[in-house]
Length: 439
Image 1 (tube, rainbow, N blue to C red):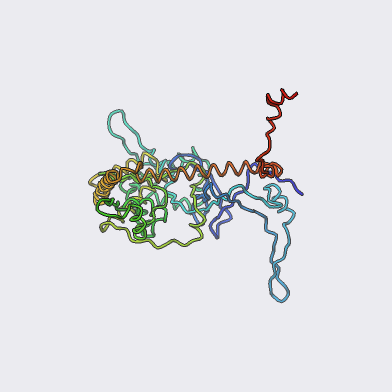
Image 2 (cartoon, rainbow, N blue to C red):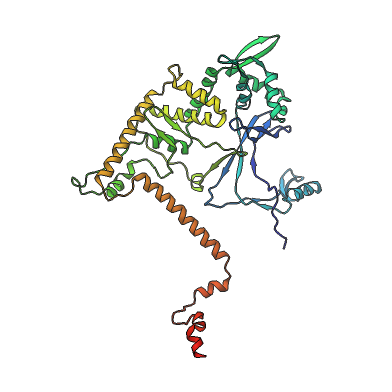
């Protein structure tokens, strides 16, 4: 039986776009948000892709079984084809030995990396925004720069960016996206670029509108739209009704949207809604999914109860906040957020802010009425939900510790635990004071 060894750099499964060029490469570029080096897939035909890491929760351990392909297709004399087990060739076998896949490989985690398209504009925005000079006395001035000067700045911090410029198709697509967000002038036959915040904000709004038109992902829709627009329920006075709060919750459960997911990070106040997205600094964006979410089709949900236009504005703000917090440098995101809060903003979020402020007032009143009408409740509803999650996590950790402890015990120890020791004297009884007197 062969020995099981762990590879220092284990293989990882990737899903790449079809019909890719033979010149396609995986390159390393700084993350436009965090400047940390991460991997991108650059194809002269299909464009530039980022890698999205799809991972299962830690409570559901999974693994991949990877093995080389050992089948080949042969054509018979009558024209029919047949798959035969040919095994790898000598060169392939030598290559498989170097990658620990000659006899198969089992990964510890079932992480999957999917190549998803990314706008090349996000890769050059940090260099374009750094083309700002501040005089000793006066506001910040913006200078026009040529495309070659901007690309030089990127290559100084990322050598792999030169691979993108080697192909005319990828360079042309980057320059085309730069013209969409920059003021341009002609100088000596060359095009000079200067970043325009108004054009950049318009381009991001177009992206956000397309995201909303196609529909937000289920998790974002549930966390940042439905939970934020959910109208709070007021308590029933026990003196006027014999129905308890728990009974009423059960009766009204079918008409309420599903709130079993974890509490979202949407905080509402009288002025605006702060939507927080966690930005990862690893080599890919990490997405944790449940097996039930993948296998079961999405359930039809009831429409959101809100004034006309408010759900659309909240979805638009959610999509825009995701773009600002994931793909733009922090100083550009802050500048664009200030542009959205001014009177010259291309879109008016005031109806949304007023409705969220009204819901915040209702939630405060409902919480106050609940605490006044039922003094026996020591914790609020949100505290109970947090406590339930904490208790579930502690129970899972305790079960894991017990499982690991059982795995470390031998079969004989487990059998001894099953023996009925009632009526038997303990071993310590033979070494106590009484045993000395008997001698």
